[in-house]
Image (cartoon, rainbow, N blue to C red; front, top):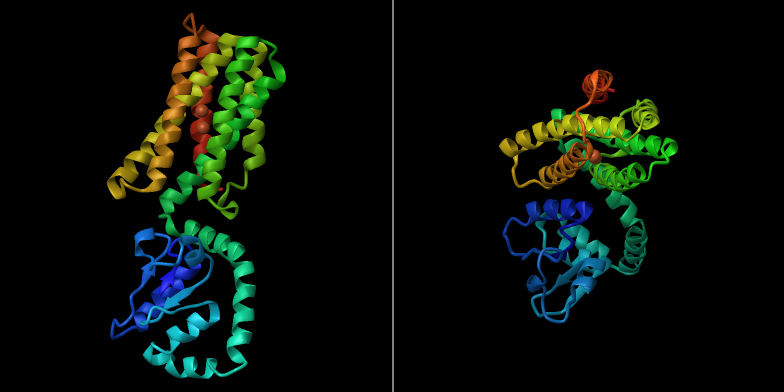
Length: 289
Ligand SMILES: [Fe+2]
Ligand SMILES: [Fe+2]
């Protein structure tokens, strides 16, 4: 049996069939895992496009006829396989299978989103919600800055950071389905926009001090999650994603600190303290709502 192990629908179905293969008479090969697992004459594209069963003689069946051949080999499904082989059932089942292939990308997306949303422990889902809210706010910060400032260096700085934050946002969106996003996103956008626009009114020093304060907080926020994943599952793709975001934020922080030529005055220190406290409060809220 050749199946698409990268497809959550196919792998779930195959797992169920494998459980029925009591005699272990069937070889199951994941066509998505390794080209070397494929029999001669069947390309990876073909194997991934349609379900394949290769019979002992080397003859391949695909689509509905492959399912029928498989059912006939599985004890509890043997009768079903015999009935399904009677004309015109193979033809009708093939029509249904082709219909499924058209729906498959959509079904796969739904299944991935579902498994993505239920696969996380509660703490991680909450943290990811706060990460998503944070990146939404980060994008808004730079939009707010760009809406206000005409300063060339600040615009270049904000534009390059904006690109990175948009990439972060898209990457987090890929691992956290929309249904799990914070319901306060409009508030995070407004808060972010103001956090960028206000200092931009006062000039580059206020902008750099603000970004340094925000990113100092974000570095710690991502760092805590990475440390926790290190203990649970150091090889996970999620850990890699969060760590790569964290490194970008550290680079943002360092860039802002390097651009700060003089230490911030009293007003600016009060403002950056406020930002730290505001970020912590926002994370607390976004984790829950
Ligand atoms: Fe970010
Ligand atoms: Fe950042």
